[in-house]
Image 1: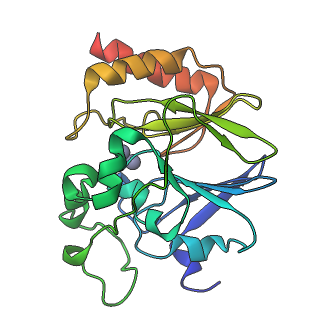
Image 2: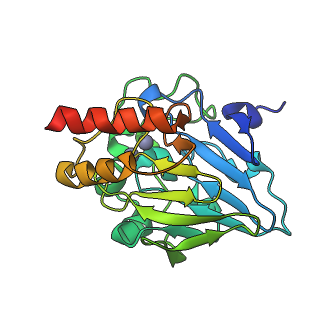
Length: 240
Ligand SMILES: [Zn+2]
Ligand SMILES: [Zn+2]
């Protein structure tokens, strides 16, 4: 395996779903990226830190369409977004994808994080030069929009709170949700600049009622419905 490939780790799940993460990135910024191989198109959800080429790692075939969806604009999810042509995300964060400013991505938190990486992505790398390449959206995914892969399709859920344009993708037929940072199996974050706790509470109420068999979060391992519900209920209890 080449050095390029060893930057990422990957775990396959049923239904052509691959969970990918960057083991050398500090745990706070170590997000999940997903590659879903559909019948007519590949779907890539979230894009890591952009420290090495995600597109190269995925080894995508040139003759198949690739749909790239960012669940939200935070630094740990959008680093390699610019490597894709068909880039989709929520309208509330559209201007932020165009500039990738620190104000929206919070990349400054990573730049100043001691031990942001346990291994440099290349010998010349230094954290102070870390920047995210702008990646303007090619199309908007607001509540109710569909992402179709031919053999399955995802409905867009707007799940604000963690950020204003946070979205999830729900495959209603198979009960699969990609939830970004709206919910994941780990400590949820609602106190960063741009977070809105009252919006987050509404999102959690919605997630409590959502009928899914598995949710793939922006961090941590996948959650069965019961686990997702208890995380959402716990959040609501803590704020009541
Ligand atoms: Zn995250
Ligand atoms: Zn986030």
